[in-house]
Amino acid sequence: MDSYALLLGSMLSAGTVLAIASLGLLINEKAGIVNLGAEGLMLCAAIAGFATTVQTGSTWIGFLAGMAVGAFLSMLFGLLVIWLNTNQYATGLALSLFGVGFSAFAGKDYVQAKLPESVQYPLPFLGDIPLVGPALFRHHPIVYFAVFLAFALIWFLYRTRSGLVLRSVGESPESAHALGYPVRRIRLLAVVAGGALCGLAGAYLSVVYTGLWVENMVAGKGWIALALTTFATWRPARVLLGAYLFGGVTMLGFHLQSVGVDVPSQFLNMMPYVATIVVLALISRNPAFIRVNMPASIGKPFYPGS
Figure: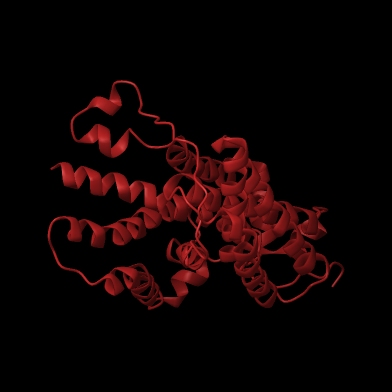
């Protein structure tokens, strides 16, 4: 039973990276912006968070550094696609490629660096419950923040006026502009907020989840996070469940190896991507379902006065 508790705990930890990044991308897409640069954002934030933590000894300052880098790069992306109307897909791919190269260059001196000793955060009493305690209540606070973030985003999008405005900008920017809302500024704020969350996911990956820096360590999680938003049909609760599902798929292979099942490492590496393809293929069988839930203006430029 201890092995199953360990599997559940590792699933939550692995899913946290995907959950935070996917929720950030969901904010972008609810405003009508597709950011394919998530992989590069997360890599730059990962090295920024790791290097800052090494230099300052504080993981929380490292998280702030990762969020700041993610927000800054997303702001540049937003200025290009929102004000200059560059192609969102091409600009996002360029950002992703830039992030891969820049993070590799910036992280050369930190490959062998060691972080300060990690602090444990068991919840009082709950962390001591047999089986359930180690699986659910001995995680870093960022794991619980991901759950809180999903429900906070549900409340914001569907229970507040600001959330309604954000969704209207994604559904019909022309109508929102006619009503006097600053569409471009709202979209830019959404892009920056989403980038900050992608940055937090990248910093958590390097500072807490792995505790080290290696080149290209995000290893496709940014692309999986993009797929998750479609898999979840742009619903925060489904994003959270999907992130834990993919986290479980990622960790299942290692769990099988730990109990004596001989699984090739190449198979383990491909499992999350196979799961992504299978899930997207299944939900794509009903295109009408996706169209109903997808923001109508997603990926399209907005021209004021057109």
